Length: 280
Image 1: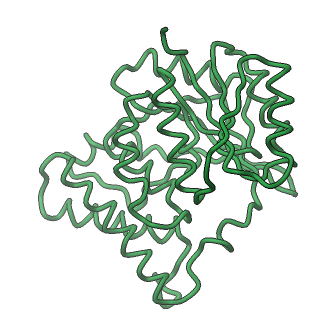
Image 2 (image 1 turned 180 degrees about the vertical axis):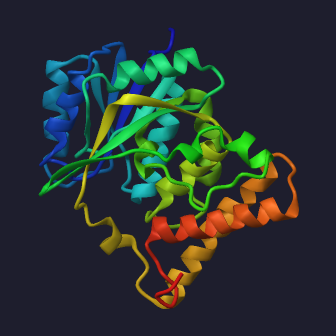
């Protein structure tokens, strides 16, 4: 049996308050050649009941009940493996996130037209209590490898961390899994994982559609470092892990590598929001 063109996986735990709205957003996409899987991480609320009720109304949706509860990172990793196994393309969707109606159609088109890319991504619409705003990538992230080879390295690697929710080619799984657990903490792991795809020019950016991300989840309070030692450790681990990507980039001069290290250090600060001695 041929794989579906797109598989959307919802790794969810206790998402009864928002799940229906997020599922409906996918159901109403202009692209309809997809399979959607609700991957339940042994929820203790009405998540499974809500999911099964939705599935009865739309045969493109199904529920997979996990045998054991695991961490958020582990559950999202299960979703990556499942999506890559089941679909030509796949994406992840948190139970409180949405997107513009053309999200899937435009990103599918982009991957179809760019066979050398592993991820199609768009701008992020950050939705909060006071309204919404658009977060777009900086031009410096485009064609990064060729710029790096010529000695041009930006001070910061500016792209939406929400690109983790973009549309992947199934063959991206191995690269994703190589970096997925390196930080050992959910805080900022999304931008850390996607950074390799960015610096190796494996992302195609699509202007127009948006991924709508709901702010205020409290992730930083739950997962962010509390002590100075932990903040420094996480900054250094993020910096080192990103700097190690020079091994997969063209050979360059010592000065360009130093610029790359500076970019990684600055990016670690911006993504983690951890300042050392309140200065850098």
